[in-house]
Image 1 (tube, rainbow, N blue to C red):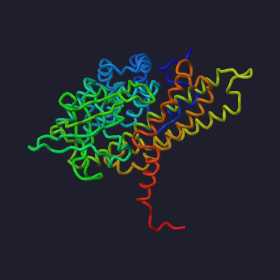
Image 2: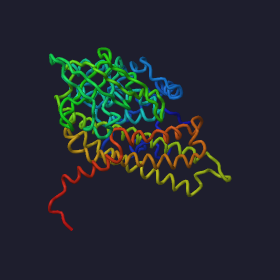
Image 3: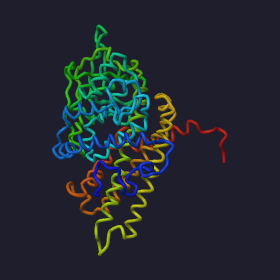
Image 4: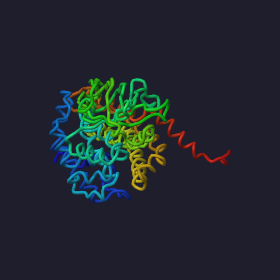
Length: 433
């Protein structure tokens, strides 16, 4: 019997330890049923269109989004919370009160297994980072209206923070919002860049400067494309498929009702930082699952490829490469599971304060692991590892796109520095050699 994409793989290290039959303090049989349900649905409803979209650069259709909404896959990628009551059901029959960050993490991992990075980001990467600020900091009317529309798949949302002038330096952003004379609207002037999903989004959770310089003058507002004049999005071509809808946004006098403020005026920076913590965790889940998928492909290829009269895996050097890859992926997964457990025991605000340093270091480490695995995988696959079709296409896509995780949500350099800075805040004064 040949393994297919919807099966739980028996290839060595292709799945996390619990799915290989090991014991776990975090997972149970319900998680197995949940993962199987998500994997089966994705295989039947997304995989074929994803391959076509990755090749054609066409974004996901409205029908696909509505199907994901009906299945509960959009809601499952946001995490536990009141928003789960906005959907009729969740994958695998899981009840909203039973849903944890471990379930959300599984959903991200299964999306990564599609191995079509551009198209998969088009399937709601903007949602996973754009909707949480609305649900956690928006007024009640916004939570219900936008939450229900987006989680049903009827509308799309994205997060608009980065600018050509300010990427990881969020406090350096220049987009400005001034109140109208009657105080009823914000009038916005500025640009945003590298906005995932922006070309197709209906809603934009946008960072603007409403006060003075630095972090203290930043606010978050919701822009509705249908109601916004002088608002334009243009496609940005990046290393992966344009089906991700990466956008450059221009606002030249865009008017937004003051009721669309998310959080407090000049208090948006804290909302952004809280959101970053969850975004970084999501990126780790996604990148690590993609990295594990590459390891599986390398095991398959090394076992069937014949060189010098025997299977490639008979070569000690190839086994050494696999050993490096496996040891890094397994240890990183253990770290991720431990941090995810901490998330389940903390409030949203506590996570941002207590886990920011650890999450930053894990994201930094995870994308460094991805770099190692991508490099070794191409060497194992040879020419097929740089060919966009055929047996090595997954390797080619991964080595071309893994750097997105090393930049988005905070660059590796920023993550490494932040992790140690956060640790030093708790350095004991009496610690001496």
